[in-house]
Length: 187
Image (cartoon, rainbow, N blue to C red):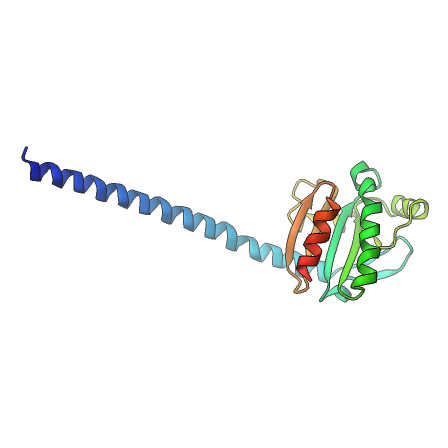
């Protein structure tokens, strides 16, 4: 075999290697794009469904979620039987009060109870908070699933931006300083 044949084979091997690499990069890009862009309609559907809901609060006041449009909304899905849910409520309450004094028309925290109405009302009577505790029941559970909580884990927190888009989800107890920073960044 001559040196020019050897060089030709090396060049062909390099070209085939580059072609294979280009194929892998293109396939990875297509996979990423399909995952990224397919999630948007789900998030949009969740937001549309969220804003179409009307819940009763623990104090028997109705809340049309459409009235929250244009605000940064922290939605905390919780239950009375969930220890981390109950543990984070005083911090969420303090954060709600903080934002109500600094940005009263721009930020809203709500708790959607995935529990029986009587349990939520009893809890609210014993441990009142300044933000609305809504009687979510199965509707609240389905709403949490639409926002990506497919396993039904609690607590589950969603941040919705002023434009109505889902910005962030948090599974488990929130880190209040991080939540504060995320809400401020959304303003």
